[in-house]
Length: 140
Image 1: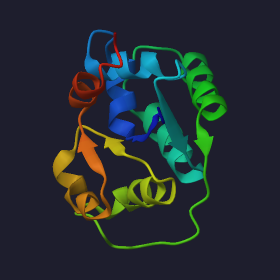
Image 2: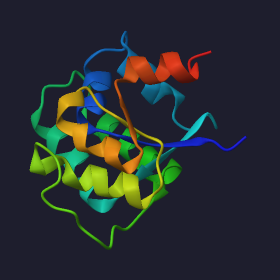
Image 3: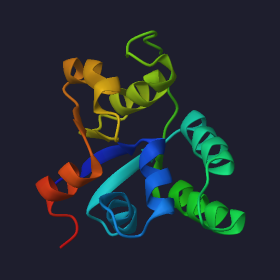
Image 4: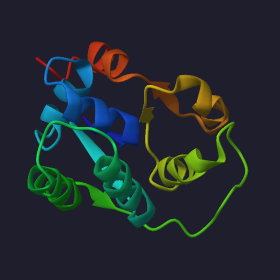
């Protein structure tokens, strides 16, 4: 069976770094276990680095760098050669939609469902970490 391919929004990473008790942490813990594939692009990695460096997270910068290095290693690295902007309610999220479409993802995992309402016209699911985990049973 073909694995689902997903894009993880930055707010999910921030939540995972802030608490090891929630669905965001559970999802991040499943990365690399052959349950699904993650995709990443240079703009998304730069956003991860930027937000995690200025948001409060109770881990060291070294730990953040290690996890981002792992995500780069395990994820499918993609270049987006076309742009559909503005497409979403928050234009800063357009690069995530473009990455998901270019990579033929099944889902965008985010806590900001309303910001990604335009993704459905591309056949993408927009789910919270909890919804994704419940639907796919990736935590079992």
